[in-house]
Length: 290
Image: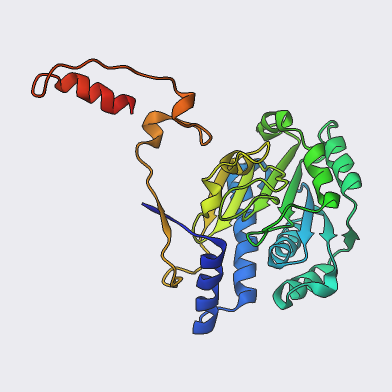
């Protein structure tokens, strides 16, 4: 069974690895950024064949630090890269600040203007320009409250009905979220202003929120994440003291139920059976319906 972690369990695991001296937080951030680039190229091989354009949206936390690594790697790949920072660079954690400064040696950081960002990627999607990769590294697993209004503009600009069109192999704009789409609760999947992604890249283990849906908004957990890819960043062997949740993967493929489904969305069955010993088929049918 697949292990699912909470945000606190993931922090514990990373802290355990760092305390061991086998890896630093800066090295973990570098591995995470490389994992995001690898996952994007694996999902859309055409992106690795020629320089494209990236719009990297960074927050003022370690998720933003991962975004700065992605920006630097894509720039080194020959891409045109634009980085926007939501928050104050002076409040970045130490490792994220180092990667912010490394990026600043290659390019500039643009102050946050959500309306301008939204107009930019919508314009890119309607003209035959470079392929565009939008990297969401604003709010990671630590988000516990509704996103600020100045970020929520992005949610309004990115309509759910545009997602399949953008996700096609010939789509102009592709969205990649680091760890979770910004606006999603890591531990519950609750919608706190989710901007959905085509691809969500997380690390070490999936998180509970990747699999739980939400009735609190337009996008449920897995709907907002869409495809989830887990990248190894070298944390195997390090564990949290808090036991993980385990995902039971059977019989979901057989039932093919979407995450918001419940017993009242699937109708009712009345099964009439003979007495014990003579109604086996009916009981099997009842079990299947249940």
